[in-house]
Amino acid sequence: MAYSIDASSDHCYEGTTCLINKLNIRNEEKLAEVEAAIVLGKVTRLDQNPIQGAFDFEHYKRIHQFLFCDLYDWAGQIRKIDFSKKGTVFTPANEIQSCADACFKRIQSFCADGLSHHELSVEVADFYHTVNMIHPFREGNGRTQRAFFSQWMQHLGYRLDLTAVDPDEFMVATIYATQGVMDQLVDCFERAIQPMQLQMNMSML
Image 1 (cartoon, one colour):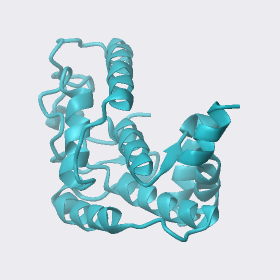
Image 2: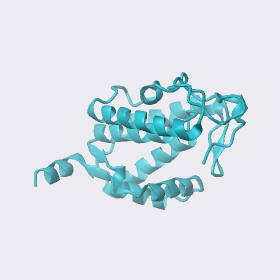
Image 3: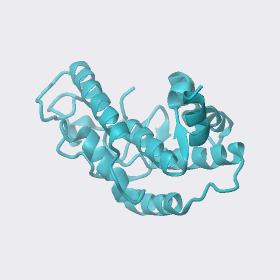
Image 4: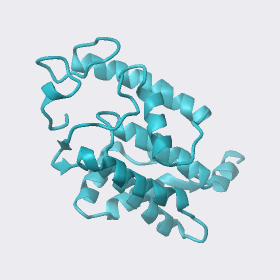
């Protein structure tokens, strides 16, 4: 489902809701197919060679820029319009920078030492939900989130495997979170987070 916006006012070809892109693809379905293929390849490269940074908002924007720079001139840049999706109203554009700075400052200072698996999952779910509500980019927010959180969790000594969770279930969990119900999202992260040492031991069996 597309974002609820006035398409003519933001980076779309005239008379369409197809984003202006470097490949000049003017069909939304075709653009989505090409975008998915390109970004999948970029995500694979990130898994092998992560973008180094301080896990602040600038780091986050560099990941988005890397993933989408082959398609959009505005890759890595904060959106300039307000929008909603499936009834969820995201952070207004003029508040993104301040909200993101506050959120990523907390992420930078977060320490997982001494937390139980459940407690860690609660904290990660809360961070994930907060970043999702900020939704800083015109497109590509979810894929940037997953790439960033995967790298961040590895930095903390954990592996984030969201393939352990059904994609539709995860999407529903994020929607419930916007309504203040976090249980399902926490449960998703409890299944997706594994200590790195456990992962290494399992690979040796």
